[in-house]
Structures are given as structure tokens and as C-alpha cells.
Image 1: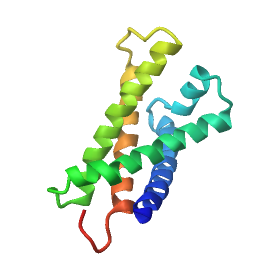
Image 2: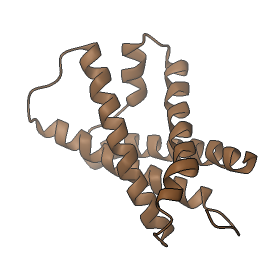
Image 3: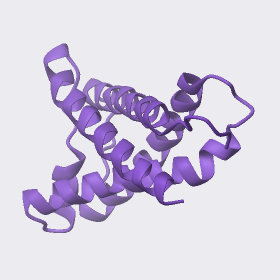
Length: 146
């Protein structure tokens, strides 16, 4: 149990760091820079350090959910990469629900079908797929089954 918990902290932290780095690098590849910690800082009036801490805590929480719940649900799938991909989609959906909920609480939701919104959602999707795959790879059981 403690090993799974520690694995969640490590995999969630590493995956969140890599995903966050991708979000900033994606801006140089033509995508829109997505910064969830900035939205959290604005909505909850947090300082930058606390907003980053909340962002990383969410990543750790999602990794723990994968380890204790979703990995067991996905045990019929042999491929760790496919498990991570599916979990990344789930994490993306959770993040979008949270993001749009926070955005609506903070200010009016955007109504345009602007290209920037499509690029922002696309970069978020890619980032969360990367997140899910990294969590699945790092936290996979070494010698035992789920």
C-alpha cells in the first residue's frame, strides 16, 4: 500500500512536470500556451508558488486515482502504453470539466469557436495523454499483478 502511494507521488510529480514543460514548449510549435496554474491563481487569488503547488497536487491526486482505481479497471488491457493513453483521456476530460467550471466561476465562458481555443484544447489533450502514459509507465507493477 505504501509503495503504491509513493509510486503515485513520484509518477504524478514527474508526469505533471513533463506535461507542464510540454505546455510551454507547445507554444513554440504553434499551439496556444496553456497554463492551468495561472487560472487557479486568478480564480482563487493564489500566489504563483501556491498555484503551482495546487497544479502538482492535482497531478499527484490523478496518479493516485490511476494506481488505486483505474489501473485495476484497465487490467484487461495488456499494453501499459494503451492503459496510459486511456487514462490520459480520462485525465483530460476531468481537467476540461474542472477548467471550464473554474473559468465560468471566474468570468464569462468564451463563445467563439476561435482557432486559439481549438489549439488550446488540442495542446491540453496532448499534454494529458503524455501525463497518462508517463504515470502508467512509472507506476506499473514490477513483479505482481493488479
